[in-house]
Length: 149
Image 1 (spheres, rainbow, N blue to C red):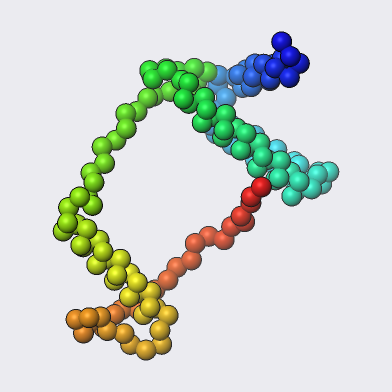
Image 2: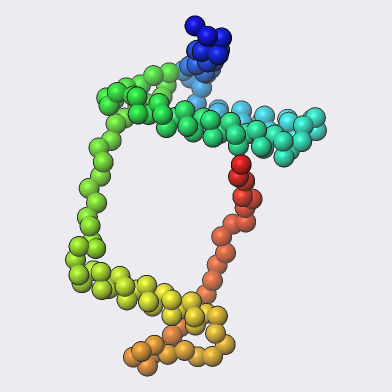
């Protein structure tokens, strides 16, 4: 076995045994928050460097989870306090197959565009039927930081 393969096998075993069966989601959240508080309070590490590595680690973990999900048997099982429940794909009605639904959907999109124009306009706007277009209120989403690598 190559040293790289041996290293990966050892890491896989470590990850598989990382947490006890009674380690809850609530405890995981608490440990993560405490880690960050301590790391930021100590001041020994740059917050941006730490976040950079956490984002990379999250990408690794997400890829591991996605790949391993494809290898899990499709049967209900509990392991180390985690429950695995397979779900069948849900039925999705294809509303767009109905021409009436499609027409109404298109009209709704057109109305949304008209409402956007009205919101930006200082003048009163009327639709094709002569009805005044309401100036709708706005709300803002929460501010965030975009991180990419």
